Image 1 (cartoon, helix red, strand yellow):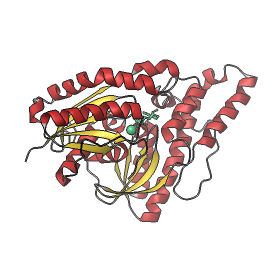
Image 2 (cartoon, helix red, strand yellow; image 1 turned 135 degrees about the vertical axis):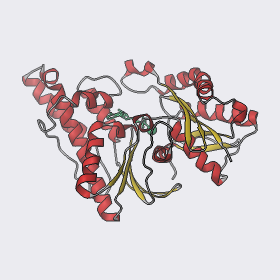
Image 3 (cartoon, helix red, strand yellow; image 1 turned 120 degrees about the vertical axis):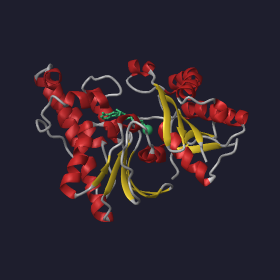
Length: 339
Ligand code: KG4
Ligand code: ZN
């Protein structure tokens, strides 16, 4: 059986569509939204409008690039949540209409499950290894930080999560304090490449177990810089690379310490990362170190499947299609994950 799945992602500030033939990715299109740059963060109302503007061209392009006609689609999968409600509604409404018009199944996908299942996308250009169950996945994005034990495709257990800010938020807030534009994560990563990661030390949180906390780090950076700027108003400018490298080392250290603990507690050494922050070069390097030091089998997604994308919605939709797990036309978005 050949299943063509259209995946639609619109949970935050990327409008994305992808087409898969079974588990093989045929096209993956994303339209970002520059409109938020001037505001230092995503403005929900502007995001909804930009989705409304972009959704039809993005989906048309994805179908065209896949070299199929829309009548060949077997199912439409969309992000149900978590995310911004106004953004989600654009994707959901479009998915409902298309599924109704083509008389094909409509499939609701959880964005966080999708980040994890992105590891199962097959791509003719990339032959990435696929994790074996059970594996641990560190899901780190702008809104979430979780360690998930993945027992099977749809049996996932959250072992620990952040009690305040997400790891991506920690990168973005640190960047903002240093005067870098939103989203700061990728910029901190770039600048860190030329810096000394051991130049500065910031307080690490003392949270027991597998939960995370990042709000103290933000305060620690803020107070440190406030004191230094009193002595030298050029301090940030003159030390940007070292500051970024030190911030990155601290955040990555917090993440890896918890992964080590989760691996020791569960005995699982299949370790994956997912979500926007899994694009971070420091985290990727630290995971490879874990492979060498602790004998982990590591799974690092290609950059295009780390940050928000529709290919991950498509693969999750395909797996749900195989299970006959369909939604009806009354399905509504949710702001928080329920798995
Ligand atoms: O998964 P994602 O694209 O969207 C959400 O679902 O939130 O994650 C976005 C987050 C942002 O906080 C962004 O700054 C961060 O991922 N990010 C990075 C890097 N690339 C994206 N953080 C650190 N280093 C990167 N290279
Ligand atoms: Zn995401």
